[in-house]
Length: 277
Length: 277
Image 1 (cartoon, helix red, strand yellow):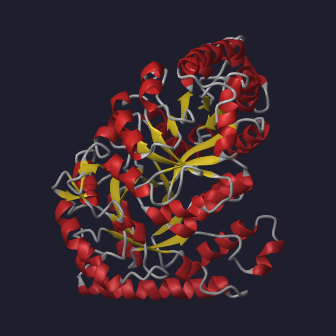
Image 2 (tube, one colour; image 1 turned 90 degrees about the horizontal axis):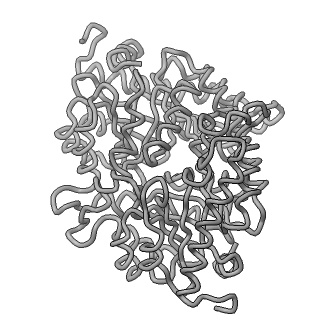
Image 3 (cartoon, chains in turn cyan, purple; image 1 turned 30 degrees about the vertical axis):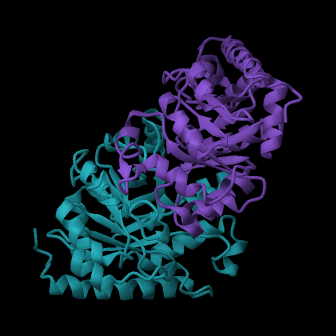
């Protein structure tokens, strides 16, 4: 999916919501355990119930890998099931030396046809570049993450100049363009969005941490939005695990709709209309 | 496997070689393609031919993921096949927020019974801590990697104090002990081992980059060895792809044996004997 197509989806749906499919088998409703692949059944029903309110899905690979090759097969079925209208993110946080990163890129872009994959920056350009070589595919580079441990290194000044996460963004700005590169910026740091927009005015940002992790949608949107919205705000647990009863999908749909309505209001305020270019 | 058991294996085998199973299906001998799972057949024969000369195996998960759920199944069969006498490393370079890292730990420690997993430090303590909670399991934390991109961030001074990779090590020293934490230090930076040994005198180091990437075994051993050897030197492509003919396993065995003989000589020089404690 291209940036323009993603922007059009956002305008059509009046939403920049990403639903995180962190589908932990120990947290899905018990009545699903009778299915051959309970997690796939869970994902199907979640997708059906939320697809009108979101523009992206983000399966977190850890929750599939923890179930071994069966879990991996479930991930393959899930990506096949997500409609083509939705931007797909393999939240895998990969990154290795060049020839290895190429293999990861093949895993997510060729074998499973994800639109994007999250990539860790620690190993530098040759760990990221192989992912950027795939046409119409995206790298979403970790910049400032939503967890407490982001304080350990990401906030510390590098080369007596900028915090590490800023340096990562400033360096990565030279690696590619806003047509195939996004950044992860956690919702738990709304005060940082102004600076981040100075560094990367055009790029989309994937913003995790709304909901269970406590991030604030209004603040993020206020500080983080750009001329093409430029935000994919993710919520995982607060949507998909909102109910553990037989009504889980219905309740997930309501939660997603509530986010969508709030987002539609913000888009209205910011004067984004369907005709915006 | 405990540190003491690993040390004993090194003394018995007179080797601190780790064989990297970066088993790229496009590079294995063509005559294996007739098997149901050519990569597993390749790994089996490589393991049989090299197990007397090495103390550890390191499958790189990317080369399995790139083949989808079948590749993941191949990884499961491979880890089952590796003898219990050998230390096993899932070279996965994972790391995510706490509840997600726990899932990755389950994938590699419970589902597949690896002894260790490589972990990326960028997200800080709560991305690493969940891996440290599994008994007799190890975290191998990326410090200074063997690739060129290690220059981009790892070498840059953090907080006007130490290069990022040193800071990672100094901070991580507080997270755990040498009983369940190792560091990745690339063989392409032999001049850095002296400083690294000041920071982490007791820890084992996993050293990739010998062979195809150009690292020098003598230099690494000279600067990096500690009182319990403290090194696992990895070679992948220079062993497993030394021949692409029907003799591939035999040639891999010869290459591994050559490393082992060189290592035995170094251990002799350093006066490590079977009775060393």
